[in-house]
Image 1 (cartoon, rainbow, N blue to C red):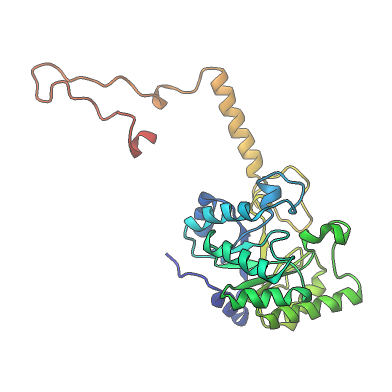
Image 2 (image 1 turned 45 degrees about the horizontal axis):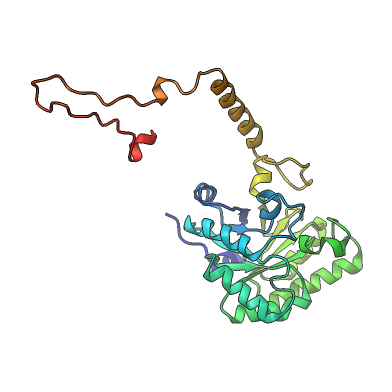
Length: 294
């Protein structure tokens, strides 16, 4: 079992020049598998609203939904640090709300840190959460919870003024105490400037290769999706197609009576011959216990 990754580990990776590999996960078994790969950071993101819940965007996601999936992920006891996303309106209304909800993600969900979107105006919120002993990851650029204000999912920081503002905001989040910042949907040149301007790691998604790390949505990179994927997503396997093929084969075999075969069936308990030791002893093929599933 590898050593547990903490916020200090992530900070040291920036200083040593080691890239940070991050990914989303929403359930126990996926987390078990993912953690065997050497992943550094697992984000239980509000992207679960679209990937798991079928919402059109992340805005409907509730605290209860995030906590539900955080519990599943944290039960896997990953070596990677677990970051819980703070959903829309869990921190925007007041500092008190923000601290309480961040505490719920840690206490009820098992998160080891939280992530929230936004720049300078959320500095008091970030400071208060950190004061409550909860590590915070910031999030700048294309912030999905602000999609209506941004006029949709648009690349941010393309003009000189907005780019300069984002650099200032990154520095403000660093001063507030964030141990990392997700940079989403910005030109790679701007992400490079931000990365060089601050001493905490940047984790990019649609922000080019100059960030200190990268994060992708698990389902996207595995090809489990219906809608067209953003340009920044690299699909490493077409698991969706393979799932469809496997289930289609199952349906075909059930319809044709090919499944289950005798090898996937149980039989009546056998009795031994009369007069021999162990008369009437049943076989071990009882259909109960761990071996029955094999």
